[in-house]
Amino acid sequence: KNMADFAKVNSVYSKYLPMRCPAARLCVALPAPWPQRPNQNVVMEAAGGEISQDTLHVQSISYWAPCNIGPYSQAKTLDGRLILISGQIALDPSSMVIKAESVADQTRRCLHNLKAILGVSKSVLNQNLRVSIFVTDMAHSTEVLQVWAEATAPEALAFCNLDFIQVVSLPRGALVELQVACLLTGREVPKKRTISSDLGEDVTVDCWSLQDDCCSSLCYLSPSASGVAEGWSNVKAEDTGRRLGASVLSSLNDSGLTLLDTVSLRLLYTRDLEGPEELRNSLIAGFKKGLQGSHGTVCEDVAGFSCLVAEGLSVVERPESCSSVLDLRVERQSLVAELLALGPKP
View 1: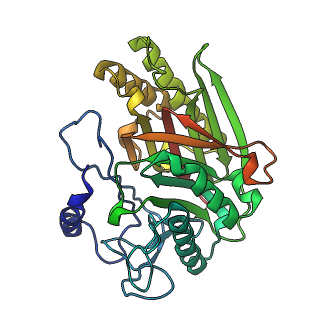
View 2: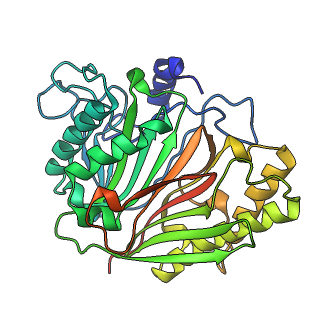
């Protein structure tokens, strides 16, 4: 909730989680970490399981990429297929300070650091499966996207799921932080498909899904506008949440996966939907019902599930044929579900 508590949180975190080969992680400050627990100051997403992991954990200052400013690793490679990179801010590796002042220059430094880490982890930016970009001001999204497009091939933008999440603050006063999940170089890029579920005149659920044994889905309400929930009943809120959850579940099932294969699942909404507590709780309850499949698995059983409120949300939409950043659209949203899953080896 408050980035000033970063050091205190790290000191407690270190007592309970292993310091040998620690997790890849991200740290941001959000306006309200957990809707059902308004007095809680810290929420931790955690995912684990019986799966092989290779860890990139460099603690010494160098010139190739930033060392860790907390008890975490630069990257984790899961089962030799999926690379999870810790959130990257614009730290200069040799000095461990943020020298870049503009959001564009900070984004370039973040990407430089990402490329270095991916190179050691046997991947490249064009193999991105999911990209979550955390910004302190949503007005920066277009500029960040322009820099990102300059650093990657057009086809990379055509298949990765990319969204912007506006937060209260980031470590070291950064303006932008990048979190990515990548396939190893040489792995075939999964095919994308779109699910649309009409909820009535005012709301549609769209789902951009990347199909493979590594599944990434980005589901959201469209069109979105401030006050989209105005006039909703509890029944309408629950039904909307249920269909959003069902879209997430459908993307998993179409990949031959289940909720138990989930690596991370975030339900994010903006203050537009913070509204009456009863209405918000109905929406969240509906989302959980939509996710419940034939195996009886519920959200609380899913690795890495969290429900968070953000200052703002945007999703990057693109046509089937994407040749430049001019083809991309940054659309404001009120409710977004991010899913990342890793199934058994094919």
